[in-house]
Length: 134
Image (spheres, rainbow, N blue to C red):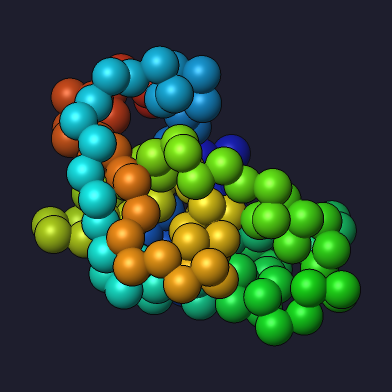
């Protein structure tokens, strides 16, 4: 179970995985790289993925984009994001691909006007390889 599940707002309940996962294991996966239309993923920029100080799930990437000075830490992470690394997507519902890792990269790609972003899609087998035991 995800340690912060009691803090997850309604907007994220259907898209956020309810588990902990290992970032190093995720980045070590060797999966095919797909090029996904930014338009298909843009809706996720309106979800409250990020912290605002001590408040979890308080800021959307769209808010960061609109007010970069107010959210300087997230904006700076966005500007520093390396688009040569694919984002990671997990199928959280049938045909619903949610960003597991790479929201800053998606925002940067959108800010720069990119039509596509490199992505790796985790199927159920790959996802099991990165989920930490409860």
